[in-house]
Length: 229
Image 1: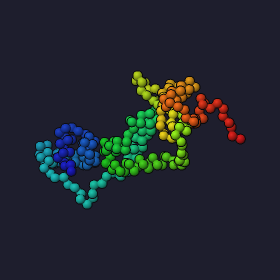
Image 2: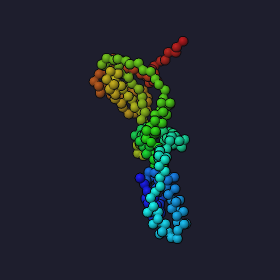
Image 3: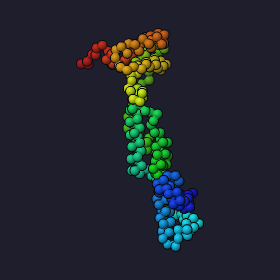
Image 4: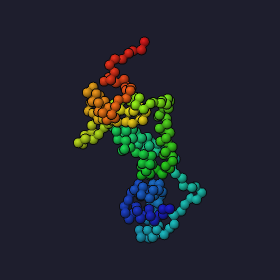
């Protein structure tokens, strides 16, 4: 429990702002403002600052016992801050900066830093609701494969910081259907030469060739496309 003494000492002896005091003590800024206004009113009603300081520091804080202190509900302001942080996470994900994304715990701590005394479970529930509303449910068919039967190939993309410059590179990714074993090679271009070289290196790496290779309709692998009538 924080007392008037702590708030007065932090605000008047150290020169902290109301926002800083509320953040450091993790209490509502309105509470800080209330105590400071009471102290300023006391300064005007007594003959000296020393007398006011003595009275304030010895006076016990009054609490309204009929209304329990509750955490802030999920207000519009809180939702807007969470939405903004989630949007920044989306940008980071698109830039390949997954490790720099804020987790639910980080978002909750940021709300506390901005003096929103909202519960962690409330933040998690809202984020979960946003994720579920934006993600469409998909149906999957489980498939079974034999060892060495099928291997899938596809191109991926990775963004790296090289020499202080963000560079987009391409991944030639091989995935074995039976074991889900994956192997990838990095290239500057998605051309035929890179495509053929990646296959040569991969087959040499595993010491063999799969019975069937599966491609996702890419130009370097598909010689001719048939149109459905």
